[in-house]
Image 1 (tube, helix red, strand yellow):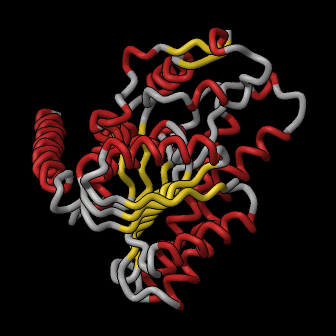
Image 2: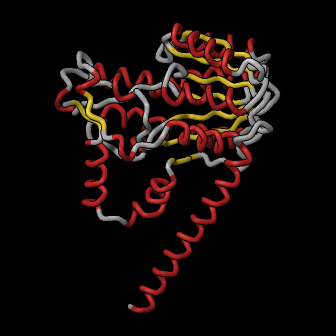
Image 3: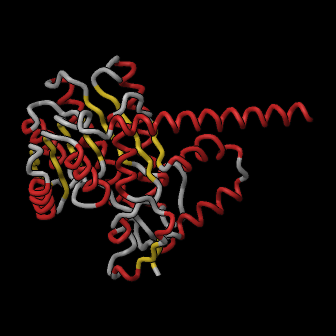
Length: 323
């Protein structure tokens, strides 16, 4: 028994030590990547750019880099134009170019149009695409009067990433010579089911199955890592407005949405880590932020009793709900 416990302790120390090392290496890489040298002269597409993580991605590249050509897309083109004017005014000396494309990512033809217009605007060179558009949910399954909301979230959160990828891959094979990084914005709710989020979690879980299979197909084809690289980023709760237009908030005022922000991640911190993984040398296919959740989910969850996991997930679910 003593030998067994000693072995477990040594294994635990080794795992912790490895993660401390990886964390320190990541922070070193974050400093290198989030610099003018690395984030300049980039050709970028950002879906869901009118607010939240998408808006911060735009600001991040505009703040740090120079001479970036960025395509921003959302359903609210007026907000996109407003953001474009703000960014170009604030960073007028940096030589950025921004192109707005009104896109509903749940519509096939609009996704096709987005890729075609973006490729033309970016001179057939797409360095990075952030598939960020999505909608959340704060509705118990028992509260749904029909499945329209679940189907709608699947169209937006799942096909809203898969459809642009479909047309992008055609472009990469036929016209683009250089490498492209695809960043799919998922969620911790895509790794663990969360209360109030049957629609949201299922749409994000589906992303993981699709892109894991796609990665294997691209490896078999011999172009993964050469022509294209994929990363699935899973943020925890982030301080954005996504919760106020979630499924379940219809006909509710903002004051009805209860949000416990005390443990939510700042959006700029989330974006800094995302960009490091996507633009860095050693990006992970599955990238979890913040690091504490990454450590717990990847190494400790398989060993934790189910009641503890369920308690944690119930608490997480309760951090955003409708009163």
